[in-house]
Structure formats: C-alpha cells, structure tokens
Image (cartoon, rainbow, N blue to C red; front, side, top):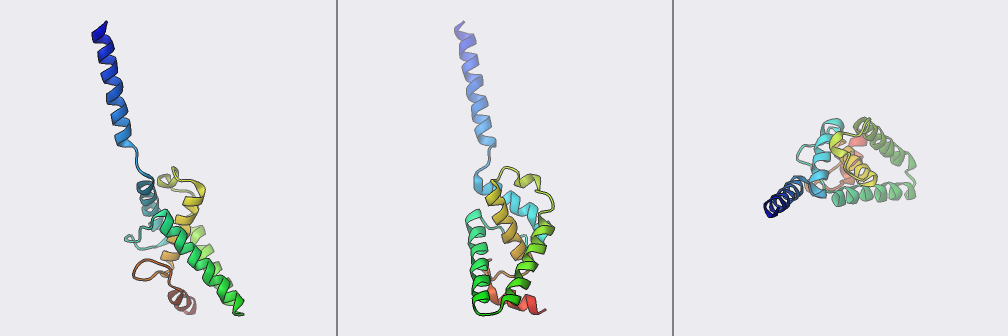
Length: 139
C-alpha cells in the first residue's frame, strides 16, 4: 500500500513539474503574438515590443494626433488615423493563434503597435516617431 501511495505521489509531482515547465510567461506570449503579427502588418521582425511598450507607442500616437487636431490640422490627423486603421485591419483580419492567450486589450495594443511599425513610423529605439509619420503621409 505504501509503495502504491508513494508511486502515485511521485507521479503527481512529476506531472505538476512538467506542466509548470511548459507554461509561458506573459512576456513570452506577447512576443509570440508580435511575431505572428509581423507578417500581417509588415513591421520589422526585430520590432518586438512588450505589452507595456506597445501601449506607450499607441499612447504617443494618440497624443500626437490630438495635438495635430488642436493645431488646426484635422485633415492630417484623419489621414494618419485612416492609415493606422487600414494597416490594423490588414493585420487583424483574424486573431492569430499565437495571440489567443492574451487579453483583448493586450492584443489590441500589440496589433496597433505592430501596425505603427509596419507603416514605418518608429525610430531607432522602436518608439513612435511623429516626424516619420508626417514623412510617411507626404509620400
């Protein structure tokens, strides 16, 4: 009886250890998602923002567009918003399997950040670059 109990306990511990070793961290899940989105949005494969970095990039775009509107250039802001929306729709036609484990807000931030990268609107540090955005809209 003790041997059976011992064997059962060891088996349970091994299964628990194997299961824990197979799960991915949130950052790894986000990285897998960004890799899947790269092809769809045309962003650089080296551009792999975390969820936090993606949110910062999207926030920077939002603030820039709001500033452009306040400056009286609503048409430019609309053109930029339309370009991002089009690129986002191209990338997000269907949610890639690699993105399924992520919450909706995290996925949306990564998709938008990838679209911004795909438009070429990021600088050397992969942050949003408003000058590249303006140059991209002129071209």
